[in-house]
Image (cartoon, rainbow, N blue to C red):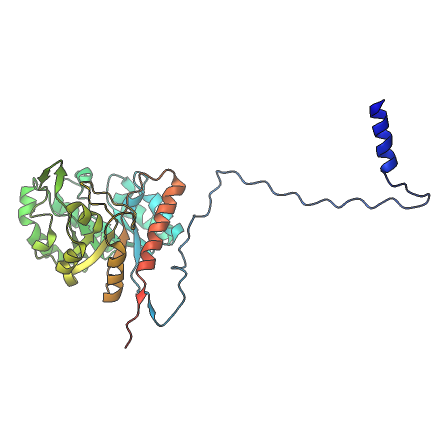
Length: 327
């Protein structure tokens, strides 16, 4: 009974239509909200820096033409192809190829194809002189350097990054300073010898490199400064750069906390003067490349790694801008 009473009340509440009155117009249907696309679809990067930072043109602001590149080592354990793809999507100016166990990094035709596909120039080649690359290309260290030089010349890179020899490579170490100078005189490619660090275990130090990890003690033509290595060696970054002087040709930008590990942190997350060094390079007319060689293995996901590499690029471009000198 109660249900019948309620139905009668609802019917009486409806407006009655008179005879001959046209039917009311149907209610317009609202457009349906489109469903979200599947999460598997490729998303835009979290931070895009393709437009070289949003900095207004101003006569008091100087933004140098220094190219900012991504080292293919920055996506390890992913491969070289992923590095090219990320560098292009985030707006880097080019890449530095770390020649290592990835077969693509050793194949000049494959590297050229990646460069053309992503329109990413190869600015530098890192010779396979790490512990994990002792058998890449060959076991002979001089042949490695010759092949790295040939790769740079073929791919249009102007720099080969090389580490000093390990102490147990005795013959190579004895000939290294003179041999690098001889090879540098045979090409327009710069052999930029990179500063290293003592290996530490608890309170002990092991001198693993010869002639030494402090590369400014030798008469190399060109240097690479690596700020993560500076942190690990616990020396002053600006004092090292001062000793390198005009021979500083290449920069590996990464941060470090000063622990015994070679951390390669995102710039700004450690204790090194990354921002101050970039500003100094901008003021002094540095003509080399700045390469982000960072460790993203602790990034929680591909999206987080992409955000880390975008942050590193934005940091670098921001601090490469400096005030113009007033005449």
